Amino acid sequence: MSENTTQAIETKAVEEYIPSEDLGSLPRQGLLHEETAELVEELFAFHAWTPEMIEGGKRVRETLADAYKAIIKHVPPSPSRTRALNCLTDARMLANTAITFKGVV
Image (cartoon, rainbow, N blue to C red; front, side, top):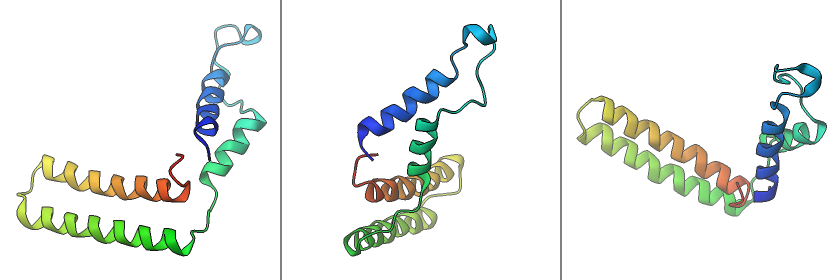
């Protein structure tokens, strides 16, 4: 998925919630253009990984798991530690997305 595709999703989403003259001041919530729906489907569809992607994902997972364990072992329980652990979980998900879409998303 290209940067233009991602931008198109965001633009369409914004356009769909701009009030129209037909609806007065009510947002057009619930309406979804076909093109936007297709882009969303592509974003959330299953995409099989190549062997290279699988290897890269494995290395990222292992590295983040090591960091996660180190934080649990060496950082006292606190809201900051919880946030740090959550950030590692987010990092894994974002890395998976970058791998899946070859860095475009």
